[in-house]
Image 1 (cartoon, rainbow, N blue to C red):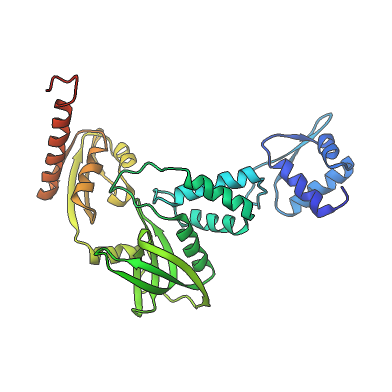
Image 2: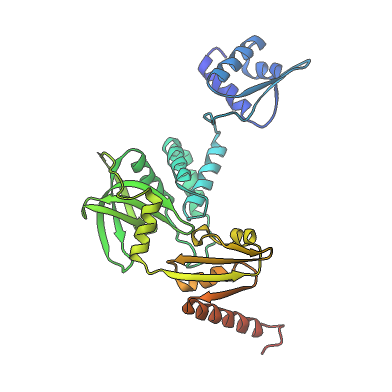
Length: 328
């Protein structure tokens, strides 16, 4: 193989498999001499790929973790698998899957050949996600990638939007950032029609497309995008003061509650107390507290105590009336 760029790409593809390659095997695969392999390894190192050489009778090479993330070469199956995984994660506001994942999906889908893009869409359409109704909002990953690309390219965005009361409007905005909460995606943008900053739930966005018109990003009136979203939600939704004690260590409770509810403070080796402000529905809060899977006591507000009591009653009656439990 005399084409040096093509040979380097083939060599890199081999090295990105999790194994050690003897120099002689690499030379045979690429139909070059051992000396050429050594020169190509040096070229890859100059490009930032951390290739480690091992000594011995034969000697070998393998790609190791370095100080920076170099570009990766993916075959068709790997590219499809990653795109499907990113779409599945991005389509639901899973905690920890944030804007970086959407940017990665946008970059990958931009360079996917049409045959692979069709395979990804087919797999996505054939997959049914398991959702807890009222606990997550499904988002079209294509909408997320369009928005992410418009943010990166500083392009104005048009879309249809359905408000909480069902009213539908057409919007033209300068997109600023995507923000992922534990359950939803939000777009922070400057609304040109309202001449002001706005936040939009992405699951209520339809037919989004970048107009191609560039803009100079404006400065947010306060903090970063996450802070702006939090303050916007606080203004638009009533808050409740939640006060709950748990009969479990604080670190256990932290793994069972969404980060949006804050952090419980330890009150002993096997107990903790959560005091926080929440804008979520009382039904959702009651369910989330029950899912912590330990004994707990709600001190306030009184409406939350009522919802927890009602939920407990329904669950108790359901168990009593189930076959094999002594009920009717």
